[in-house]
Structure formats: structure tokens, C-alpha cells
Image 1 (cartoon, rainbow, N blue to C red):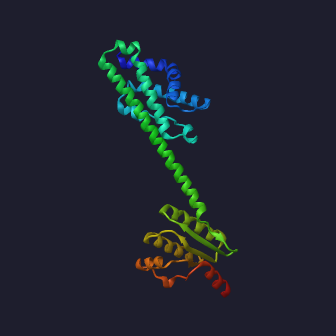
Image 2: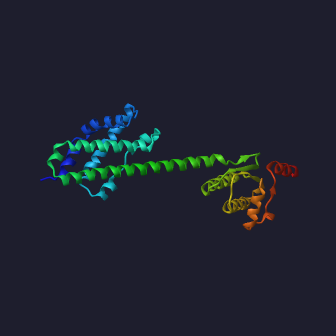
Image 3: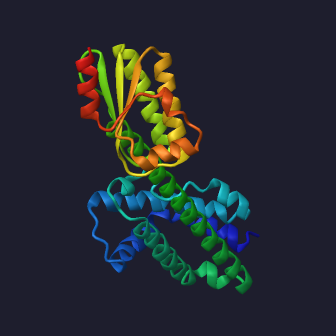
Length: 273
């Protein structure tokens, strides 16, 4: 004879559509969520799939339930529309409570033992919790990937090598630099140096917001790499505190060509021919 877990699993499989049709509108109305027909259809499809996983969870261990859970909004439909994670979680929480209330009224639960009823309820709660955890992880992962892509794009456009003429260019360094941002700048700069066979590259430090010895060391290593490619590097806009930090880090300014500002450097070098 089937136990309550097996009976309830069969019930969910057979009544997915009916349950979602009955409980979803009440859930959205209770949360006072404005939704389009497309939103409603997507919620319906996601909840129907979730109920299928909940049914299977009644016949699995907690570990198996967690491993099989893909989360809600797996196609990032609501994420792409700017829906907050809290709203998605609220839908799952309220729907789960409505589902438990619905179960309490069924003949299956009334005919079962009290202990079996508690076990089934606990497993359903666990299955929804697994969905909530997976949904949160997916949301955060997507957010982090989106942020990384945005930062990569901003890095690519925020520190361009600007051509002055066919053989001269300037690299204006602006803002703060993380290790990732500096690597982008270095790759772009070396690419431009080789692409245009630059004779001179002016590296202007006047827009640097903050720095540390690691940043300074990386920049001086960049100048040496550029010079190995046969390009003359000229440093401009180095502030007193930056120069002092470089000296304290053991860097030799005697081997570097520096000017107080970019304009002065351009005038001096171009006049010298």
C-alpha cells in the first residue's frame, strides 16, 4: 500500500495545471504584483515545472532534491525585465503557503497519519527552500557576470590610447585602477603600440585618483615593456607623492623621461624634432 509521500507525489503530477491555475492568481493578487499576460504565462510554466520537481522530491533524499533543483526564472525572464529578486522569492513563498493550505483540505492528508502529514509538509517546504536557494544563487551569478562584463567594457573605453599623429600617442590614466583594469589597459596599450608602430607614447598620470606601490610598480614595468618594443615612453603629470612613493619602492627615476605636464612634454619634444 502506497504511503502518503507516494500518494501526494502522484497527486502533484496529476494536478499540476489545476493547482497552478487555482493558486497563482491568488498569489499575485495577494502580493499586489502588476503583471502582463506574458508574465502570467511565464509564472505558470515555471510553477508547473517546480511542482513536478516537488513531486519527485517526495520520493528523494534532501541531497538528491538539492542536486536536482535548477531554480526559478531559469531563463532569466524576470531578471531581464529588472524584477527584483525579493519579488520572485515572495511569489515562491506565498505560493508555497497557499499550496500547504490546499493540501490540508485534501482527502489524502485527512486519510493519512498525522506523522506522515508532517513529513510530507517538511519535504515540500524543503523542496521550495531548495528552489529559493538555487534561484538566489542563479540571480547572484548572473548579476556578477553582468557586472564583470560591464566593468570589462568600461575598462576598454575609459583608458583609450589617443593618437596624436601617425607616430605619437598619449595614454591618459584616469580614476582608480584595480588589477583587472590595469591588465586591460596594458593589453590595449601594447596592442596599439605594435599596431601603429609608435615612436613615442606619452603616459599621463594627472588623472590618477589613487595609487599604491603595486600600481606604480606595474606601470613602471609597462614602460619598460613598451621600450623593449622600440617605443620611447614619456611620463607626464607625476605628482610629488607619487614620485616619493616610487622612490621608496626602489624605482630609479634617472632612467625615465618625465615632464610636469603633457603640454610641456609635447612642446619640448616636438621643438627638439
